[in-house]
Image (cartoon, rainbow, N blue to C red; front, side, top):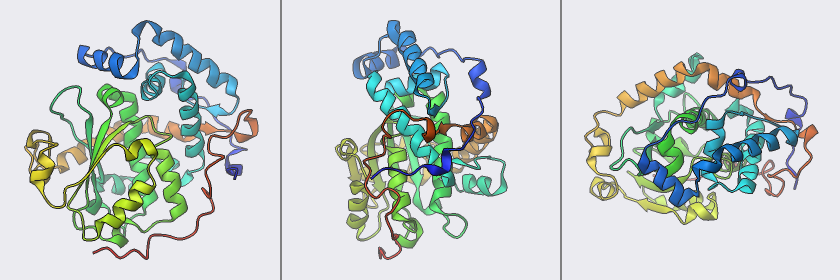
Length: 334
């Protein structure tokens, strides 16, 4: 079943201002250099050539309207362990799925009152510390911070992608070492967390897995509700085979169990940690998104023009991607 992308075929893309001034690649600490070499097949001497090859391919593709900054593209090289063919597929998927998710990828102004109210909820919170400088970065997802009376799941995902765009550009530890997610469900109920369309959920899973250069290293659930196994099975069903093999742990309500993986030194007070209240990191990320407002709005002009595509759409084999009916409203999890 081919993916319909009629809504983007007539779009006119303008050149990002950052294309005119290339940002040099950052120098990274020796521990990250070693990890990139050992785990990601990175060779400093070939990076420039690889980046040139990617930019040439993007220009020749005809349909991709994407960023050309070296630092941005290096994130995709690292995500794909410097396999040029995998980079091409991931970049194509990255821009293709974004083009068919306007509810997520449009109106990304962090100063817009509604968008800012979603940011202030603090559902997605990158944490600042890890035990070792080459450990996966920690992302805290706070389920009960999601106020379903104020916004819908696509609005939460919008802010998630805004934060992810800045991590991709700015955080070398994240791009080289990956990320571990702590998903705190708190007092969330089924209606609170799963009131969204299954078709959208499938698109969102592609956006966050096949299309994302942010590599997952594990999923840790805390404060899980009764009958959580049902939710976990749905969660696993949306995962790629690779992610299903990652560490997936349900800690119930046991902070002691969570601390076996994440000591208090890297956790906020709400999870028995020593970093202080999580609100300070919500506030820091709110300001960071505002400071990068121009960059985030610029992303709206990027994507694909299917009318100019000369290759197979990378989402063409995704069955029922746009036709699945129904929602998770009928789930009853207390």
